[in-house]
Image (cartoon, rainbow, N blue to C red; front, side):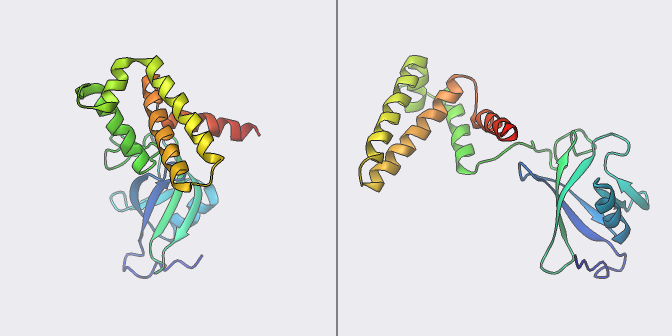
Length: 201
């Protein structure tokens, strides 16, 4: 890997630390050539601490190591994207990230939709919100809706109208997300089950 440590007079380049699984950015540190090599050799992310003026392996005191998974160099060869498997919180303040964020899987719009469903469940007027009305009607009604939408998906899958098939698929996914929350779960819980099966196979 051709890394240009000479771009800056101090020989340091930024290293962006990202969870290899959740893709959450955990922190930003700086590396010199020696820190980079130690990271590669030990598989534990090591920085050059500008405060301590020495090499510093993340977790050397706390035990919250950043286990190396992969390193990517940017187009200018002067910034690293380092993917890791963290052991415990990354920030010295005890949070998952140095921006006080949670390190959990995100699924873009689907995660936003889950948040909206949760808000409707907790706060919305059941007379004005379809989602809130389903939660008010209870588990049997929500499960029934999932069953109905699943049947519709099967019917449309056997036909040739792609728009109807995708529309019914969206309805099924939407109502399944509601059912998950009615049972006290979210999509992350299902993903974890799938991951556990992958490891066994």
